[in-house]
Figure 1 (cartoon, rainbow over the protein chains, first blue to last red):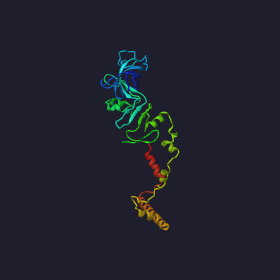
Figure 2: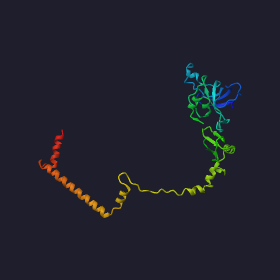
Figure 3: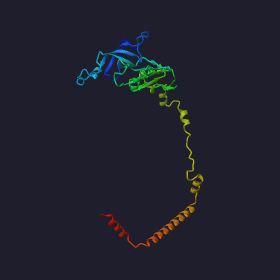
Figure 4: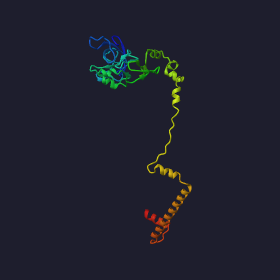
Length: 137
Length: 148
């Protein structure tokens, strides 16, 4: 149930910590609410400080990947506090809303994921992210 | 179809019942209904809530039938024959009278002695041809040859 102005934790190692949802990328007929497995556009509200000494060359590809506060990126929701219904009738609820950052090609921006992710991702076609996750519930 | 058990009360959770709660430390808790979930979130200790399985086990409520059943189970040892000897042979050997055993032992020793004597005779006959050399001389020769 994440829509405009909702904040999510970013649980990969891209450097961002908290992001704010700006848009939900779904078909226009569906209500503007995102749940697990949905892509959203986010604004980075809080990011890990980038060490000033290492990346002196501003044109290197590594510098381009650095996440700063105020960046506009895409993200994928992986956990929600709102219970998700499973086909067997059970409901799963996580303790927080979390997501991982993606690039334009729907690939993970970070390299590792820290924490649990929901199983729904596999069903919605995010198998790559599921394979990197340490635990899937 | 797997029937889970409630993390709080110990009741069985059938499919389509209950909720799964995943905490931030990736620990999974299953609740059979809103009552158990609410109590868990209020951080109540199930050991103190009288109707939970944890409490009942701790205070040994209604456990007497289980304990009574578990007494009678002692394995009986059966004697079995091995590859070389079947059961009858083992029994026969065990039940031999001591005199029979002594006689057998004596027979064995005499047989061994005879064998030894025969061997000594044989080696003596072989050595008659060679000159009589003491052991030390033989050893000395060997050393001289084997040395630098």
